[in-house]
Image 1 (cartoon, rainbow, N blue to C red):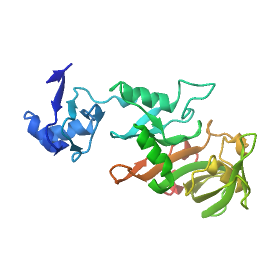
Image 2 (image 1 turned 30 degrees about the vertical axis):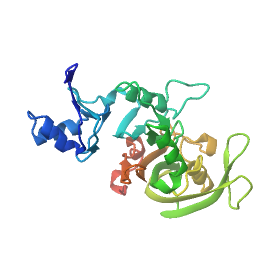
Image 3 (image 1 turned 180 degrees about the vertical axis):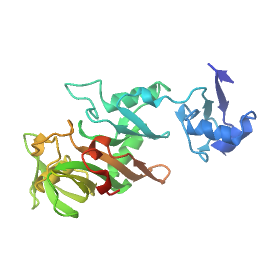
Image 4 (image 1 turned 135 degrees about the vertical axis):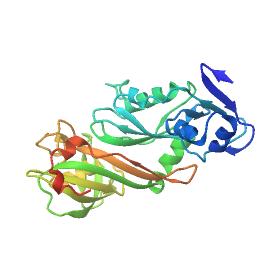
Length: 298
């Protein structure tokens, strides 16, 4: 069956996607089908699937599209992973995670929602976690309310690793260390740090490693055990090395023209499949340009 030039196939019995496609696309060889999967031209119930061994069930609909998925149309958002349960994206600096009273349209949530609905009007999207407006990097969205609740309720157990990179003011003395404190937000919406637990505070743990140093700045990798609001920004301030561009938490310089913080990677256990997924993004070129390449530690 064809719909606007796209091939539509109905699944009659449980099978692996690759085997099903080989059996039902006699004009395509294995390499042709691999290319279709890689280019996200194979949709299961209108959701792109690229895994060869993805299990399909009776009653599902398989669509083979003529055109490759045009991800570049989403300005400021890059799709890094998608399945029927989740969407992972890389958000650019300057884009809100979700709407505020002042901005309702240009948000990561709206952009990704429009992206998934453009292929399936019945598709929904749910926020799982947030990044600050000026922080770039990896974000995860859920496609069902059930998936959202599972992830949010079990976030600390499912997320195995979260790594950020930051450009901070001054030369950080120690090559690596761990910062442990208690964080609490005051009435002015500013988070402050305390060495001792106080009422309403939450324990925050940040492990950092210095990747590079220049005359007046350091490039730091921060691995967080806890995901408290503004955690890295506050911990860098308490260390005496505020994130550049972060006037809210003590920065006096802004050489990047943005907040020098990027969510580089996230590793977590998929709630449905149990597989460990790792979403990686590169360190922003602007960050690296402030440091000599020969000194950079990967």
